[in-house]
Length: 100
Image (tube, rainbow, N blue to C red; front, side, top):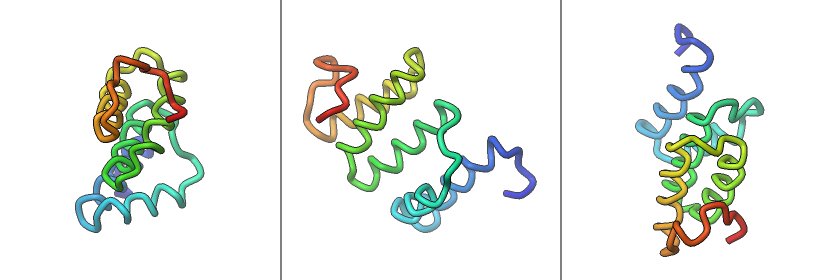
């Protein structure tokens, strides 16, 4: 990953950790980073890791904050719907409800 552009390196590291070591290893890598979430794509990846780890409530709350920062990003809205589905909640009822 050293040859990748820094913006792509983050995603490659997390994707590799997910594939090779599982979602909890990817989450551990995320926890060690202090420069997270400068792009909606990074936020979407973080949410996917949280969802895969079974942390739908945390993912939903995180995505609520992210959608306020990037309100027109479709990837974040899709991830939000997935988080709602894991919690058996209707996503259309409260697209910015991040307190549940």
